Image 1 (cartoon, rainbow, N blue to C red):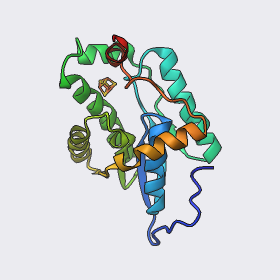
Image 2: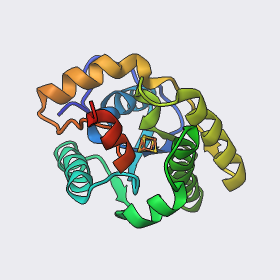
Image 3: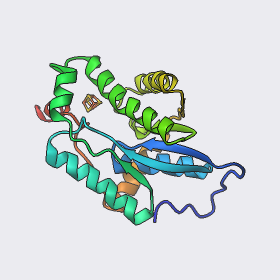
Length: 191
Ligand code: SF4
């Protein structure tokens, strides 16, 4: 439905396969449009063990599944709910280190799968959120890419944030109220 882009020029030539790590369906709308508009062959990856509690995790995952089915988007599901593991990794969850660990965890997996499945590059919808630590995501993406021997595609998808919001409301996608981990839920609602 919304992945049909009538009237938009696609770059011709060799098909470049890219793995798009997807944190949630609404954040994927503009990156998909941007990448496919440039001629990339995109496959999604769901791997977000940072999302808590379990019912919230399922809602976000199922919202992506629903969107993917409706638009024929191929997605690899690494369906791992990681409450205990995540808490062990981030400890008390204080400061920037928590998000750094969280980004690295997810992007390391994306880089590993991109390498293993012969993608030309990988990227993440985390780059479309104005609420995330954008520079840090880019830095970690490039670091894990180098480690895995694959290319990290950096693009500032934040330019499409308003479009993500408008389209996701239009097609009725589930829109979350907080970033993901149990700490972010508390920080969002404590007031
Ligand atoms: S606030 Fe968001 S990015 Fe930071 S650790 Fe929690 S889920 Fe991850």
